[in-house]
Image (cartoon, rainbow, N blue to C red; front, side):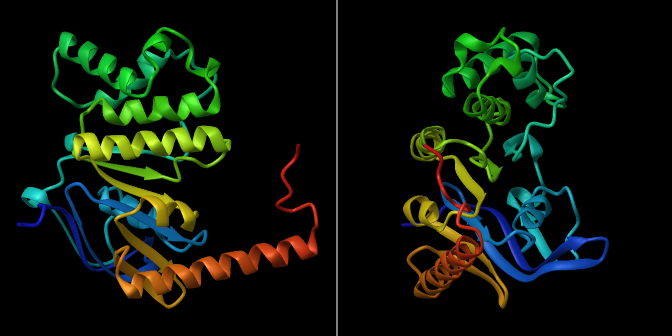
Length: 253
């Protein structure tokens, strides 16, 4: 059986800001239908690589190739960690989602249809005319997802999309992403700290470790070993913090 087409390929990429390298020697191929999880500590380069793949910052070394030889942003969806719209601006949910179509050449009717479909997908069809700021945290994150889906992308990149959500909202959001992947074949690239979520949902992993970035299928023994080491280090770090501050990590009732 032939392999799925490559959507984004990185070869020996170094990434960072203003000449400062954050991560380097990164090589990976993201194929249609895959679920990639970028794991690592804060500052390790996960989000920086995602922004590089999006074409928002130039690589400091190596090369990045996109399907068809060029980056077609109309076929790429992006969900940032936080909504960047000011709370002082009166914005409805529908208006917020419609921002995802900025730059797209679509007629008014087509735009209305796309917004309606995107809102229905994230179960916010009845919230279109409500203020964005009346939504709960989980609902706002689903609105942010709808803003990305309104372009009907082939690949969806999400930067720590469940940060700050309660357990129920996080679970519902992740299940929705898996559904998009399985039913629509949508490729996912997700930045996260949660190794357990990656183990459960990922098909491929890019793990940003002190000795380099390990990439590959979840079943690859080298990836598994790196993931186990990352989990052990994370648990040790949490144990040290908890010993220093018994309140750290305690869940309030």
